[in-house]
Length: 139
Length: 139
Image (cartoon, rainbow over all chains, first blue to last red; front, side, top):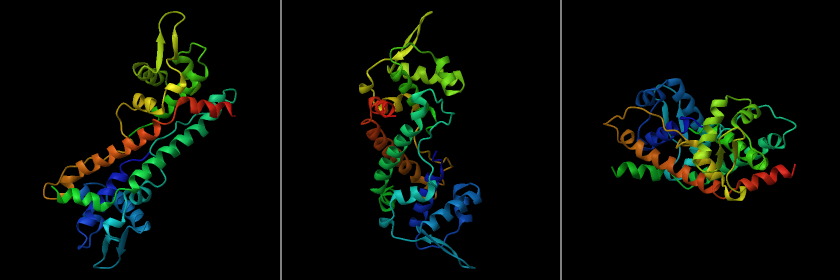
């Protein structure tokens, strides 16, 4: 299942976009989220790996958003943050070989999970970080 | 977050559709799923409430599918089984009043969650239990 790492990653990206003229770091973000710095560092690391965030080393180092918010879709953030976890989970149970339903469930549910992921990613691919930023300015 | 109750409910519905000429009961289903009978009874109760399953009391009572599999969409099962839980979860944290991003996050993420739910339900509304049964017959 997808846990809160997607929503936290979205907020990290909005925060970096909103403060795009400043260098930030994971420790400062951890204070904003009031959460475990290790968790934030892991999420930031995933966003860096997906080339959505740039990381600079050294005394004056930190992190910055890597692209324009209009070039970063929520699908980009979703794919970077969920680490191939899916939105719905199938239950695990031993297959009963004499039961045709039981034998077919893995394949059937796999197709459903794929369908949900595809429709979700399609929706998220049309939403950009710049759309979210507009909602902040409007407040 | 949506847990395994959706996937288990799908399998319950397929099992009832596949054995539509038999009266079944939660205890028998629990053995198939090798899981807690209370959990299965709760899921069956939700499916009965949603009028997807009929429940008959008495010595020869039990449960049966209430409609034709071609009239039951996966959206029907999803709505009945997930009890208004959503596919993705927002992280909970105190709002920092001085921070415009923090103040806007609830609304922003609420819109994203709504969008994901809508696109998922749209996908599931086009898939019917009868489609899944065909995948069993094909094995």
